[in-house]
Image (cartoon, rainbow, N blue to C red; front, side, top):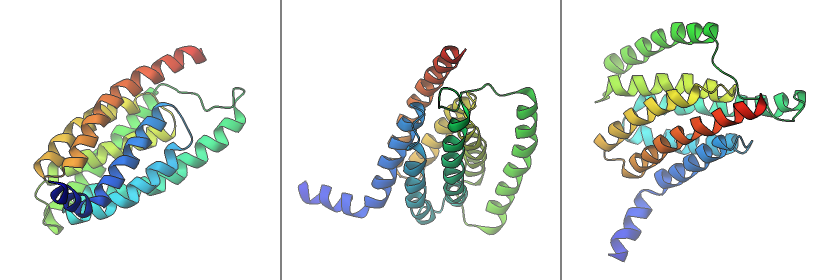
Length: 199
């Protein structure tokens, strides 16, 4: 039993490390802690390898985007809090204009990712991979801007991702996304409370 466990840990250490850092990322983001971004950066780098090996290419590409967004979020949270009286970037609601722009950007992104996966890869799950990746692009931008609606996006995305990763046999990642799902609900409640305290 010990040998089997040791062997499994040895074979899956990259995925496990990425999952643990991903868990730290979500907990830190709920707390609005600046360390959200370095944790997300490291998790994303590890998951580029994991998803490449699992042939989940859009999720892999999404992690490349997450690397860039980690630097953006890190910068925005650092610079934004210097301009705020409380020293912290406030949580805001999604405006109608932002929602319209995000919708207009999301549909072509989804279509493009889906087309690329169907035509140019051997992905066995192009639709779900495209959907989760598109939601992740939108959700991460909203998280970086501290828009409350990001948690709604993550709830939908995490639910879809749980089933996708389960179907691919990525058990540490499946477990991580089940935890993400519950934490996304908690994140929404926590950020909503934070907004009422700001007011």
